[in-house]
Amino acid sequence: MLISAAGKLLIMKTLAFVRDEKKNRVTVACADGMVSVSSHCAYCRHCTGIVVGKRVAPAPQKEALNAMRQGKGSDDALMNAAMMFNTFVRDGSAIACDDDANAGFLKLY
Image (cartoon, rainbow, N blue to C red; front, side, top):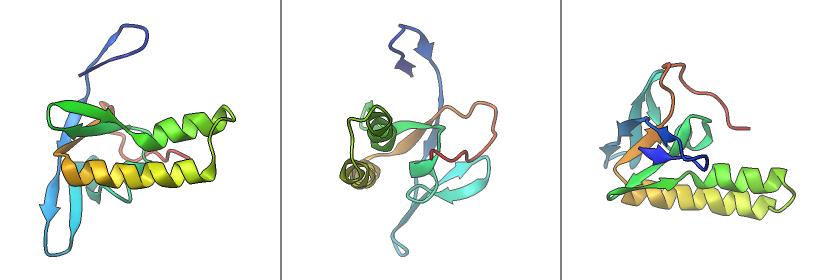
């Protein structure tokens, strides 16, 4: 559950991580089926963040992309955001997803 800048309460679903230690892969049950967090959720518009402990860390790629669109970011910032996303996945337990309509993957850029 998140609160937007306008003060509205945003309720979204959480997709629990399924870790495969042998393949060193983390997947979630998306509307498209079992998908890799690193290759799908990281670049999906529906991903709003990663559940780490009791809080939801916002998706770093979205923040970096918004900064780039405003002329404040760089390509390096987007690459660093992707690395930070992977760090959150390593430490986290679920993806916060706002795909309430079960539309599935929608590319971020």
